[in-house]
Structure formats: structure tokens, C-alpha cells
Image (cartoon, rainbow, N blue to C red; front, side):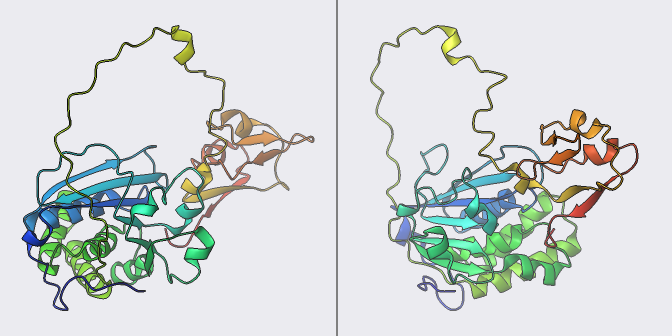
Length: 323
């Protein structure tokens, strides 16, 4: 883990006036269930408590556990006039290292503008070369720390939020704690778990170095009135969607969304074909002998095949021990 210290050893945030003319843009990447939306809100609320103008917004995509999720937080000393996704982030926060291998997730898009990339991983060693990461890399095993502190690691929001807050160098440990309590309570977390999450956040905040934001782009000015243009007419069929064309579905490795995976017992399989017929994603095909074959790159782990199998010949196996 490496980085340039941007706040004092005591965790005090720098005076707001020092950054009043710039905006810090933080982009979070994770999977459904990691709590990246809550992490972004914790960072935003902490910055608001520090006196900044804040905007945060998530992009859910598919509404299920394990699916890629992105969240955006903008922090500024002036009103935030930008809207939409953050294309050129100052900080990229990645809650799941496997997203770096997803060709569609685009977690490193715009990394040229970033001052640092945080990865939830045991070590930063080899990450730059393996994934062509150009900014400074900071790594910490948030999953392991969460599992140790809470007894489970299904939600990483407190740890991820603490790491991101510290990296910005804009909020104090006290502001982070207050924000964490507020957002976790809003999410329905019980008081006992809130206390454990806040204690974990303080530990991670103390371990992660703040970084120097090299770009800190200017606050967006009021947009000028757009030029009026004549739009040509095209036939509606040009933009009509096709219910048959696969589009980029083949490129989306939705198998990474799984928490559990179905495994067929071919010694018992009767080749009835019900799993093939009932799979909602077409992730099961039949081989030349009529046996079902699961496409694990696209199987989302809904387990309908296991439920429909009349002889209970499909077993459920845990995808990863971290969940």
C-alpha cells in the first residue's frame, strides 16, 4: 500500500477554503450486495458535514446480487453543476478485483485523469502490470477485514466508504463516523452492527493514506445555451429494437453475478430436458447425446433448473467463500 499523505496524522481534514475552486470526482465499482451505493453516500454525507457541496448517484443496472454496480460522488466547494456519470474520475474505487477482468464493466475507463485507484485486494503487487493500471494503486483487503470484524463480508460499505473518504483527504475521522452512523441507520442496519461497522471504518481510515489529487478539475460553469439544429427524419424501423439479435449479451459475463452455482449430476440425469426448457437466460444447451450443458459464463445462478429437476439431480454449490 502506498500513497502521498494529504491530511495530518490525527485525521483532521484540510481547511475547506483550500479546495473551494476545485471538484473531486470519485467513481465506485462493485457488485450487488457489496454496498457501494451506501459507501458513496457515506463519503458524500461526510463531505457534506465537512462543509462541501456534494452530489452522489448510483447506476444499478440489473437488480440482483452479484451484478455490476457503479456509483458516483462529486465533492466541491461550490455548487455542483455537472450531471450524469463520471467519465474522468479523480479517484477510482474498486470493491471487487474480478471486475478488472470484466470486458464490459469498464472500471478503468478514464483512468488517465485519475490520481489513484483503490482496489479491494490483499496486495497491490502485480496489479498495474496485469491490468494496465497507470495511476497510483492503493490496495487493502476490505473483505478480509470486514469478515474479521463483523463475522461476515456480505456488505463492505463501511470499509469501502472509509477507504474512499480517506483517499480524498477532505473529511476527518469524526465526520466519517457521523456519516457512517447516519447512512447505515437509514439502510436499516441494527445499532449493534452499526457500532461494529463504525469501529471498522475508523481502523481502515487510519490505515489508508490520503493521496494528492493532481487534477481536481475546475467546477463546471453554467452551460451556455445550445445551438438549435434541424434534426433529419428517419424511419422508425431504424431505431426499433430486435427481440432476436443478441446484441452484446455474449460479451457480458453474467456468470460473475452468481453467489451459488448449479452442478448437474450426470450419473443421475435422465435427459428429460426440463432444465433446458425452463432456463430463463438460455444458459443451458443440450449436447449431441441429449444431456444438458450449463454455460457458466452466462448462468446467473437463479437455480430454477435445480428447483425444476424432478429427480433432484442438480446440486447447489457455493460460488466463493467470501459471500
